Length: 270
Image (cartoon, rainbow, N blue to C red; front, side, top):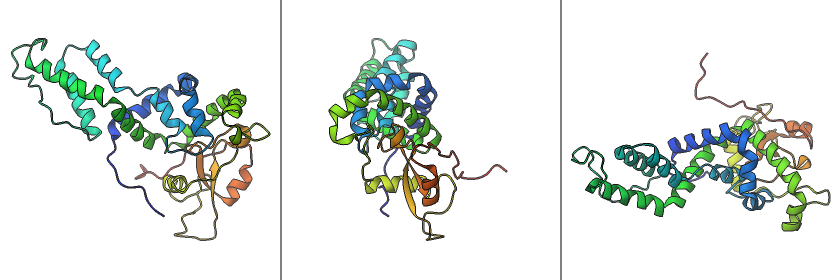
């Protein structure tokens, strides 16, 4: 099985974004779906590496807005610069720009000094590259959320309500992606998605925990399962899948949303 290539991940920023998105989902989830309606409809009919979770995270992530909020709430320019520098370091985008020297500046307010001029250059760099910075932080946050099958269950249950409300619109916009029973049509699972689910679930059935890696036992059959089934307005979004064995997948049926929050910790506390 081919593994994803190693890459730089902004995990501190990503974890912060993931926590914000999860804690606010039950209040603003539907608003986010409405905000990115066309984009979400595009990715729920066929697995796409930019998932509905990515679009939901985009509802919260805006580096330009964060800088504006910090600028409006504090007087310390060095705090703002440190935030900008840490963020750029996280996304591996440190530019070759002059750094402000706040410690040795004679202007305590930093309103009419060279420090302010240099800080403005850094702010301008962030503004010019905000789309790339936001995408990298969202990509990192997704790595955190994708491991949380319980949240994925709740997310896609709410998304199913959205799909049910818009199924006629989806049928008009994507006529080849909707069945005669007004449900999203099943699609083939791309190899990158199968690999991702196998890797996340550690080659283990999400429900009964039997081995599906073929490293220990070879008689179990791998099934990639829709967490929220298509029959109850689930989707083919890339984040709506889990690894099951044949027995659990068969017994789960076409309407059950059963999953598990069990994972393998790095170590046990007892």
